[in-house]
Image 1 (cartoon, one colour):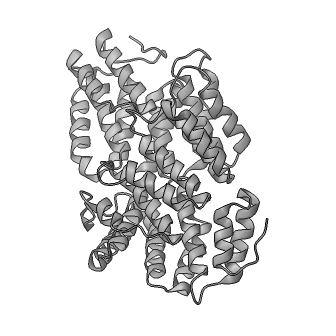
Image 2: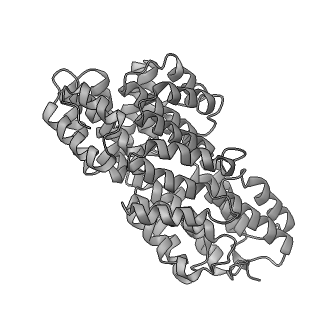
Length: 444
């Protein structure tokens, strides 16, 4: 039996397959969690391996260390059913197993091998795309989708989701005009594709098109704001456009409405809250007790340090914001110890970017301009190894700008950074703010 895209599946149950297809759509579109549909597929065919692999891979994509026992249980159950499964499903299991072991690079290589044989395997593509993002691999964010997209018929119902992925990969490679065109193409039909909306928003963010970006997200809001797990991140992008316009009150209002502890359940959602509050801090906003609110229900102890260097840095920002000095040092120490003895992808990410960034953030918070600059400036060349997007990693450069503006900072470096920024984004209100902070003449 094959699925709708011609991929062999290890079930003879049409009902089980339909539930799996719905779960796949949910993973691509972010409309509701796919777990109930995965459970329904298992109930319809208890002997089918793939739904258990789907569960494990979906949980892995949330980057929650607390979910690893559930991931391992799903993989163990899948392995018990492997004897009757097609090779493709066993290969998906092997890739997820590498990912669960912390070998993100190896997992992406394994998913790529599946795509070479099955270019319309959206399971492999979806998970590889997300972990390309978590690894900061812009080349494969674009190239992995490009290698399979021509194999997809124009009328395939899921093709718009590939276009959304392709648009984001193009944007992360700096191909902004192409990215915007492909993103708009993905949204031209009836499909709701929040990832494509997101890709176009990234283009506008990188080009400083803050008024247009606000209008874009508001116009697309019916396609992402309700019942969508990605909505919090798109509200964050809307807040970034408010920051570029120096509308700090507007950004704070968006945080309060969509990113406080009442709205942030997953770590991925809390990261956006931390990143926004840190940017507001850099711009001089009084965020009041919002750091403490964000920290509620978030396990910021060192227990899970080292699972994701990107997550660890945002946890540190939150602890700095709450003023918990001892907890901050405990987290930093745990990340350092695990990075020193680890050999997986995240240990390398922590050594190369995560730890210098965390130390640079602490130096900045302590008012140590020279120390912060010495730690943060070299990261401009290596920050992509940290994972995330250009827009997310811009926090590093913004902190560097703020360090340059501190007493004992570097006006020449700050001026150079703003010159570069102006050519990319134009003379936005936020850029004018930084010029004033650095004592530089205003430019129109």
